[in-house]
Length: 156
Length: 146
Image (cartoon, rainbow over all chains, first blue to last red; front, side, top):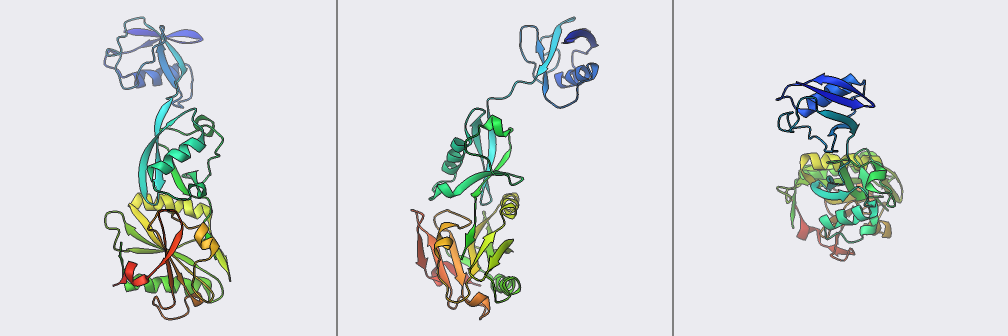
C-alpha cells in the first residue's frame, strides 16, 4: 500500500503492513534527504507519534494515510546511571530538574555520605556538571553514565 | 570489617612509593577489592597525582577514569594509602579531601616516605565515622597481612 509523508510537501511512499515504523521512518528521511540523526519521528494527522518498534498494521495505518516528519518528542523523565566507588545505580531525572537537585538525589542513593558538599557529578568524559543548569541544558540523555565523586582529592 | 591484605600487595605499594616519591615527595596508592568479596584486597592502584615534600593532589581526569574502571569491574576502594616525610598522622587536608566519603572508609599513612621496612611500623590508620569525622584506629584491628 502507499502512504503520504509530509515535510512541507507531501511525497508518496510504498510500505508493507508488516513493516516496522523505524524502517518507514528511515525511508521517509531518505525521501526528504534528512540526515539519520535519530532526531525525527513520524506523526499522524491527529498528532499521534508512531512508536518505532510497531508495524504499519499495528499502528492502525491505512492506505493513503498522511504522516508527518517532525522532531522526536523528548522524554520528560528518564533514568541516568550514577557511579560511586564501583557501584552503579539508576536515578530518575526530569528534563527541567536542576543539576543541584540531581546531585542531592544521587547522594541519597548512596547514603550515608557525610560531607556531601565535597561531592559533584561528572560526565564519563570527566566534565563537572554545573549545579545551576537543568538536565536539558547540560544535555543529559537516557541511560547516561554520571560519576558521583569528589571534586578534589588531596592530602599532605 | 577486617581486610585481608596479601603481603605482595603491601610490598608492591611500598615499591610504588619509593619509585614515585624517591624519598623526597609524598605518594598515594589505593587498595581495591571486589564488591562480591570486599574483605580480600586484590589490587593496588598507584594514582596519577602531582606531589611535593608535604602533599599530593590526584589528577581529576584520572579520577573519572578510575570511577569507570571500578564500575566496569565491580570493585571498590577500601583503603587510601599515602606517605609522609617523617611521622605518620592525618593532616587537615587528609581529613577534608579523601577519595571516598563513606563511613568505615580507611586512610593509612606510611612514615618516612616508605623508605623503612615493608610493614605497618610507625603507620597511622584513620577511619571515617558516621558524622564524617576521622578517628584513629589500630591497624591490626582492621587490616590483616596475609
